[in-house]
Length: 112
Image (tube, rainbow, N blue to C red; front, side, top):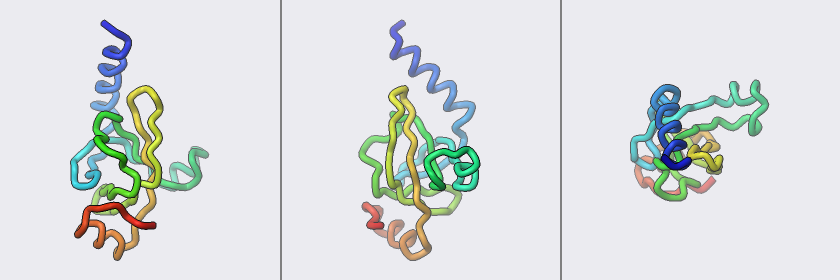
């Protein structure tokens, strides 16, 4: 078995156990791990932006400027950072009610 195949199996096992936060990325359902802004600050990671980590394989196109919805809250994807091992961290910015409603109606890139 190749290293890539082993890595893919390990990532799938990790995702099944730890990535249980359901979201939609531009209307497509995905699973990942959401880290809120407060937790991010305490961990001294990437400023105070919330982060959604998911398998890179679920991202089918450039997610920057796309709508990510988690538990009825809308976020714009500001940056996508693949880690090289099959995971991608999406750095998010929470949308206000007007931008969120506009993004839901249009499902196109969000101007921040």
